Image (tube, rainbow, N blue to C red; front, side, top):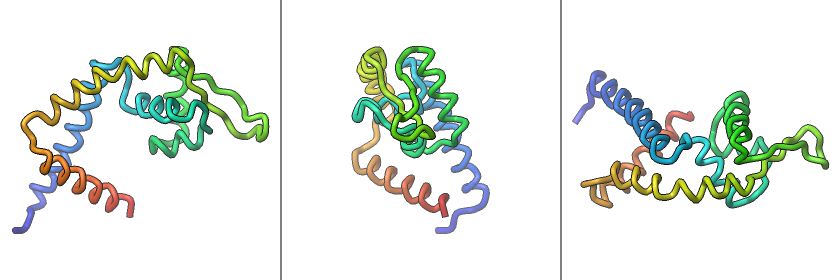
Length: 141
Protein backbone atom coordinates (compact mmCIF):
# COMPACT_ATOMS: atom_id res chain seq x y z
CA UNK A 1 0.00 0.00 0.00
CA UNK A 2 1.37 3.37 -0.96
CA UNK A 3 0.84 6.50 1.11
CA UNK A 4 -0.07 9.70 -0.73
CA UNK A 5 1.49 13.10 -0.12
CA UNK A 6 -1.84 14.23 1.29
CA UNK A 7 -1.80 11.37 3.82
CA UNK A 8 1.79 12.23 4.80
CA UNK A 9 0.69 15.82 5.31
CA UNK A 10 -2.25 14.74 7.46
CA UNK A 11 0.03 12.57 9.61
CA UNK A 12 2.50 15.42 10.12
CA UNK A 13 -0.31 17.80 11.02
CA UNK A 14 -1.77 15.26 13.49
CA UNK A 15 1.64 14.75 15.12
CA UNK A 16 2.10 18.49 15.52
CA UNK A 17 -1.45 19.00 16.81
CA UNK A 18 -1.16 16.02 19.18
CA UNK A 19 2.10 17.36 20.58
CA UNK A 20 0.51 20.74 21.23
CA UNK A 21 -2.57 19.18 22.84
CA UNK A 22 -0.54 16.88 25.09
CA UNK A 23 1.64 19.81 26.16
CA UNK A 24 -1.43 21.90 27.04
CA UNK A 25 -3.10 19.06 28.94
CA UNK A 26 0.08 18.23 30.81
CA UNK A 27 0.65 21.82 31.87
CA UNK A 28 -2.98 22.20 33.03
CA UNK A 29 -2.77 19.06 35.17
CA UNK A 30 0.74 19.53 36.60
CA UNK A 31 1.52 23.24 36.51
CA UNK A 32 4.70 22.53 34.53
CA UNK A 33 5.51 22.33 30.86
CA UNK A 34 6.68 18.94 29.63
CA UNK A 35 10.17 20.33 29.05
CA UNK A 36 10.50 21.74 32.54
CA UNK A 37 9.08 18.51 33.96
CA UNK A 38 11.72 16.48 32.08
CA UNK A 39 14.39 18.82 33.43
CA UNK A 40 13.17 18.12 36.97
CA UNK A 41 13.19 14.37 36.19
CA UNK A 42 16.92 14.47 35.46
CA UNK A 43 17.66 16.80 38.36
CA UNK A 44 15.69 14.67 40.81
CA UNK A 45 17.78 11.66 39.77
CA UNK A 46 21.15 13.43 39.94
CA UNK A 47 20.61 16.47 42.23
CA UNK A 48 23.19 18.57 40.33
CA UNK A 49 24.02 18.48 36.61
CA UNK A 50 25.82 20.66 34.12
CA UNK A 51 23.52 23.00 32.21
CA UNK A 52 24.95 21.58 28.96
CA UNK A 53 23.99 18.03 30.05
CA UNK A 54 20.50 19.18 30.90
CA UNK A 55 20.25 20.86 27.52
CA UNK A 56 21.24 17.64 25.74
CA UNK A 57 18.83 15.59 27.86
CA UNK A 58 15.80 17.66 26.87
CA UNK A 59 17.16 18.24 23.34
CA UNK A 60 16.69 22.01 23.10
CA UNK A 61 18.96 24.89 22.09
CA UNK A 62 21.00 27.12 24.41
CA UNK A 63 18.51 29.99 24.39
CA UNK A 64 15.60 27.69 25.24
CA UNK A 65 17.40 25.99 28.14
CA UNK A 66 18.25 29.41 29.56
CA UNK A 67 14.59 30.53 29.32
CA UNK A 68 13.33 27.35 31.00
CA UNK A 69 15.92 27.56 33.77
CA UNK A 70 15.07 31.19 34.39
CA UNK A 71 11.41 30.24 34.93
CA UNK A 72 12.37 27.34 37.20
CA UNK A 73 14.65 29.68 39.17
CA UNK A 74 11.88 32.28 39.55
CA UNK A 75 9.72 29.57 41.13
CA UNK A 76 12.69 28.52 43.28
CA UNK A 77 12.66 24.97 41.85
CA UNK A 78 16.32 25.10 40.80
CA UNK A 79 19.49 27.05 41.51
CA UNK A 80 22.30 27.79 39.06
CA UNK A 81 25.90 28.56 39.88
CA UNK A 82 29.26 28.51 38.15
CA UNK A 83 31.29 25.33 38.42
CA UNK A 84 34.18 26.18 40.77
CA UNK A 85 36.38 23.69 38.86
CA UNK A 86 35.60 25.23 35.47
CA UNK A 87 34.17 28.75 35.50
CA UNK A 88 32.79 28.37 31.95
CA UNK A 89 30.36 25.66 33.09
CA UNK A 90 27.07 26.24 34.87
CA UNK A 91 25.81 23.76 37.46
CA UNK A 92 22.08 23.32 37.95
CA UNK A 93 20.75 21.94 41.23
CA UNK A 94 17.20 21.05 42.20
CA UNK A 95 15.90 22.66 45.40
CA UNK A 96 13.66 21.10 48.04
CA UNK A 97 10.79 23.12 46.57
CA UNK A 98 11.67 21.67 43.15
CA UNK A 99 11.68 18.12 44.52
CA UNK A 100 8.27 18.70 46.07
CA UNK A 101 6.90 20.14 42.83
CA UNK A 102 8.25 17.16 40.89
CA UNK A 103 6.59 14.69 43.27
CA UNK A 104 3.32 16.64 43.15
CA UNK A 105 3.26 16.30 39.35
CA UNK A 106 2.91 12.51 39.46
CA UNK A 107 -0.90 12.35 39.81
CA UNK A 108 -1.41 14.87 37.01
CA UNK A 109 1.07 13.08 34.76
CA UNK A 110 -0.67 9.77 35.43
CA UNK A 111 -4.05 11.31 34.62
CA UNK A 112 -2.81 12.77 31.32
CA UNK A 113 -1.17 9.47 30.38
CA UNK A 114 -4.26 7.39 31.21
CA UNK A 115 -6.48 9.77 29.24
CA UNK A 116 -4.13 9.69 26.26
CA UNK A 117 -3.81 5.89 26.10
CA UNK A 118 -7.45 5.14 26.97
CA UNK A 119 -8.80 2.30 24.81
CA UNK A 120 -5.46 1.54 23.14
CA UNK A 121 -3.94 -1.92 23.62
CA UNK A 122 -0.44 -2.36 24.99
CA UNK A 123 0.64 -3.86 21.66
CA UNK A 124 -0.51 -0.78 19.75
CA UNK A 125 1.22 1.52 22.24
CA UNK A 126 4.47 -0.41 21.83
CA UNK A 127 4.16 -0.32 18.03
CA UNK A 128 3.42 3.41 18.15
CA UNK A 129 6.48 4.00 20.32
CA UNK A 130 8.68 2.04 17.94
CA UNK A 131 7.27 3.87 14.92
CA UNK A 132 7.70 7.29 16.51
CA UNK A 133 11.30 6.39 17.43
CA UNK A 134 11.97 5.47 13.78
CA UNK A 135 10.42 8.73 12.59
CA UNK A 136 12.52 10.66 15.11
CA UNK A 137 15.71 8.85 14.10
CA UNK A 138 14.98 9.43 10.42
CA UNK A 139 14.36 13.12 11.05
CA UNK A 140 17.85 13.43 12.56
CA UNK A 141 19.56 12.13 9.40
